[in-house]
Length: 361
Image (tube, rainbow, N blue to C red; front, side, top):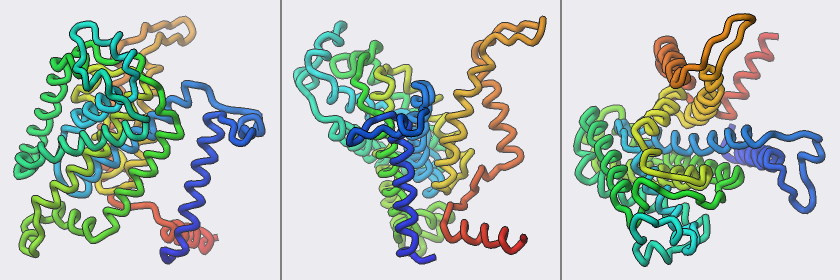
């Protein structure tokens, strides 16, 4: 199937996503509400899960670009998310609101007066994270494999500690409360599509082939005249930008942020989505984002009291993560390459699959 034939199908998928978001949010457009037409809808909890799925897909795609497609083992995603979240929050909160929040130490004048529309704030958060990624990448990307992972983990922790102590900008350990909740499903799904499109176009270009070459064999790529460091820096910066975007959206969705929110476990969750979906597969990042987000929420039931007839067992705090970790171990043992491996969804592949099923009948 050629590219011209794929465009209407891709547009149809986008249209279906827009219809689903319209129905899920219950919004009225031109006086029409799909929920009223269908006579049903979803509750606020399910809507929150859908928002988290969209944001987690953004974060997984950005980390997969760095790790899965370029081969750089980075553990610093939580730090870049923190930068995006703080920059966006500062810009979308009203000056009067910031005046009441900064009770330990007054905010700097430019922090107090800074204000911007939500779209500009999200882009600013992404750009701030990208600049941080560029500055971090310049000295660190010459390291390899495990050393890079340890170094980026240290950078993420430095960013968190700075946020905890830079009180006139971040409000210290108190963080921000009452952040305007602009990040609804429209915004989150829209940014998810933007992230998918940008990374997909990047990987479909010659630059994407170069990034894969760097991942597969740096020595051979260098012998072909490829500037390894430059390509790594490009991938790391783009990945940092979308990590900042994801952090900005997450902060606005949850309406509260503080330094404790951006611990290593946040990077670990994103990494698990990427590994579960498949390193080097954008389709895998999408499927992994859906599966892991739903699984993490569904497993909350194991922390609640359980009653089976006369038998009663108290809930065990933290059991959710134990069961989740065991599930991941099983996945890694029996499907090491993840859900998709390095494969991608394609209309041509789908057509061949249905063609084989039709021939079998």
